[in-house]
Image 1 (cartoon, one colour):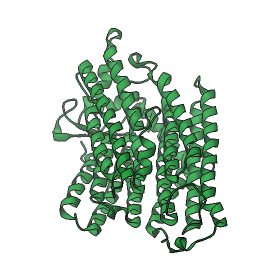
Image 2 (cartoon, one colour; image 1 turned 120 degrees about the horizontal axis):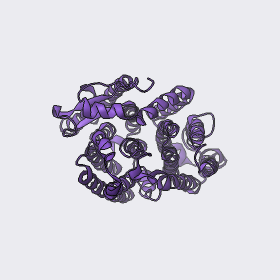
Image 3 (tube, rainbow, N blue to C red; image 1 turned 180 degrees about the vertical axis):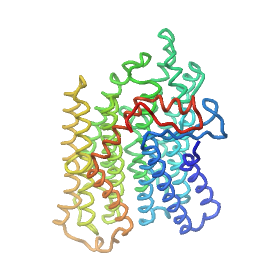
Image 4 (tube, rainbow, N blue to C red; image 1 turned 90 degrees about the vertical axis):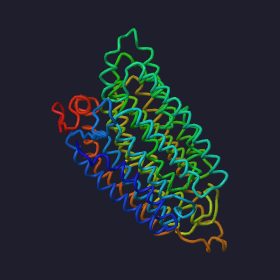
Length: 514
């Protein structure tokens, strides 16, 4: 049993109260400890990802209680990749928050930021459904505090809407957990994978209801139509660094769907047959279409970026809903891309707000720092729209290739290509109004007096764009890794045996290529 796997959860859980109790009135100390904590998280996450890269399954049993009775944290290729992605994203978001001064516009930003990281890390590493619910609630509490950071009526209204929708999801989650426990007597995911297989055809009603409820809960978290209504206002009204961190939040829902519906309720399971392709794929296609139409129709830049997040999640869910190794591999590649691109666009929107004064997509004089901000917006826009040469284009090609054998291949290709065209038009319209045509408008004195965005903010956005470039350059290696990741997901026997049969040990799959 390795103890390092619990560190991504424990470290932010200890830092948050320390910041509140020992550095409440000292923003400089808060910044130092928060950045140091995130840097430590990156180092730990990189070590865990390296250790699991050969197929090793890492297990940690809290209190040395074996599964299914005790609480377990499990690390495989998928969970450690998501932990590393979260830690890297958190660093650039934190740099922007410090450089722009967002962290000093309200109370307890850094403490809430650390609690948010704790919830995200726990959701990716937990090995049972009840603790997935617990970490979802930690996410909800911390994210609400971050969303209303620095106050404002619109922000408070959006925060209340966000909490209400997620409380509905939490209620459904509890109903699903109750149904699952009543049918199987366990909530440990590895143990559930064994017990669900033993349910006879005449006793499937309860477990099928639970599977549907779980899918609804995860679809709310992933902002899949028609459960997406909470996202545009919530993300648009949140402080920019908070919205950028929230780019990983929808991926928690996608991760949960991948984990639960490849291990506990796999596509070949008769109990839940038809659940994936009859509901999830059409909803994903509609999400993709609505998201990109929202990009074209948006009147403010922050809402444009929020709708692009819905569209990107639609693309991710299209690939996941295929439930094939190729589809999951393409989805995982696109998850990394859309997280980085969405976060970069939210931070770029904050640069525009700092230089322009507002985010309305109307013709105004050129802003402070136009050239650099425009260049970053151009790169972020072509990445999110899926234009070559950046990783969005390659990710969409992977999704289209994975969909080639499905009966709905024509619909997938038509909607993906059409939505890409619509998103290009939407981003081109926004860029033209914000940057290109702005030079034809008179330059009043109030624009001259506006301050240029902080250098650290440009460093944060530049770092995310650099990661997108690296994700493109090393697309072959990354896709190869996500392919082995998908193979591990569709052969969960080593995961199950590590958690249930041989607790406390490391296990290397003998049946898959490392």
